[in-house]
Picture (cartoon, protein in one colour):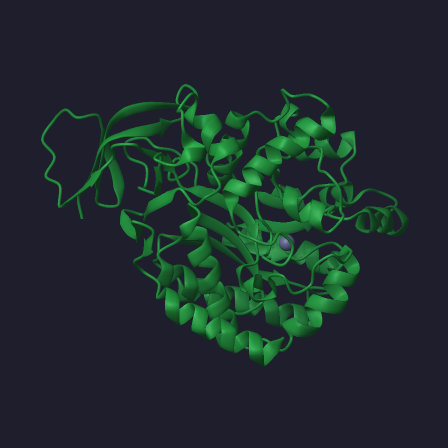
Amino acid sequence: LNIVIKNAHVLLCEPELRTVQCDLQISGGRIAGLGSGGVFRADKVIDGAHKLVMPGLINCHTHIYMSIFRNYADDLNFHKWLFDKIMPVEDRLEPEDAYWCNLLSCLEMIKTGTTCFLDMHMFKGQSVRAAMESGMRAVISRGLVGESADDPAGSGRLAEAWEEMDMARGRDRIGFMLAPHAIYTCGAGYLRHLVEMAKEKDIGLHIHLAESKKEFDDALQAYGCTPTAYLERLGLFAVPTVAAHGVYLTDEDIAILSRNGVHVASNPISNMKLGNGFAPVDKLLRAGVNLCVGTDGASSNNTLNMFKELSALSYIHKGVTGDALSVSARQALTCGTINGAKALGLGGKTGAIAPGMRADLVVIDLNRPQMRPANDLVSALVYSANGSEVETVIIDGQIVLEGGEAKTLDEERIYFEIDRIKNKVL
Ligand SMILES: [Zn+2]
C-alpha cells in the first residue's frame, strides 16, 4: 500500500530533533520520501493539516501479560508485591489467558503511540502471537530462571525460548533476546550458560539489573561486589545487553556499563511506585551510556503509556538533581525513540523518520488544547501530550490505528475476554 501524509509537521532527528512541514510518502513498508516533489502514486492520502508525524515510541522494558494485574496489587513494597501478590497468581494464568492480556497491552501501546516493545514473559509463544496479530514490532524474550546449565527447569525454559524463535522464523517484524530474569533468580552457572547460548545464536540479553536496594545489598554480601560488577565478572556484557532499571549503580558501575556498551532501560514510574528510588539517569547520560525507557509491566506503573513515562523521566531527574537542565525534552524523546531502536538492535530500521527507514509512524492531532500554541513541538510531545492525541498509527507500513480506531485488534472482544479472565483468576 502506498500512503502519503500531506503537509504535516514531520519530526526529524538529523542534525537534531526538529519539525519541518512537508509530505511524507510510504511505500513497501518503508518511508519512501519527504517533501512534495516528484510523482508519487498514493493508494491512500492522509490529510496532515494540524497534525504532527513522529517516529513510533519504543518501550524497552515491559511484561505485556501483566496487564491483568493492573490496579490489583498497589501500594506494596517490591518484595511483598512480587513474591506475595504477583507470583502466586501468575501460576494460575493459562497460556490462552496470557494471550488476551498481551492483546490488551498491544491495544494500549498502539493507542498511546508505541510501535515497538521489548517483552519479558513466561508464556511460550503468546507474546509472539500478540505481536503478529496486532501488527506491532517486537523483540521478545522468554524470562529465564535456573540454577545451572543442566538444571532441568532452567533448560526447559530455555527450550521454550528456542521453540518460539522457530515459530516466528522469517517474520522480519519480530526479534528475540534471551532474558535471564535477575541475579537473584539465576545461578552463576546458568547465567554463564546463557551468555554462551546467546553468543552461539547471535542474539542479545535482557535482564533486570540493580532494581532494588535489597538486590544491591544482597550482592555485596554474597559476591563481595555490586550486581553490575558481578555480571561483568560473569562475562554477561560480552553480549549486547539491555539492562532494565539500573537504579542502584555506583560510579564504577556506570563506568562498567559505559565501557561495555550496555543499554540501560530506565523505568522511572515503576521505580517510584515500588519504592525502589531513582536511577542515576543524569550520570548515565553524561557517561555516554545508551539510555532507553520502559514502562515495566502494567502492575507497577499502571499503564504502558510511553508519553507519561517520558515526561516522568524528564521531570523526575530535574527534581532529583536540582538542575532544570537535566534530561531535556529532546533527550527524553531521543531516549524513547532512537536510543530504544539502538538498544534493540534496530538502529537504522526504526526510531527515526528518514527515507529508507521502516514506516513506524504516529500521527498526533495538534487540535487539542494542551497542544496549543505550537511554540515548540518537541517540548509539547514530552511536557504537554498525554497519549490521547494519538490519532493514527502505522507500523511497518500497515495502518494499525486510524482516527483512534484499532484496525488489527477487536477492542470489544479483548475487553470481554479480560473481564472473563479477571473473574476467573483474581
Ligand atoms: Zn520488569
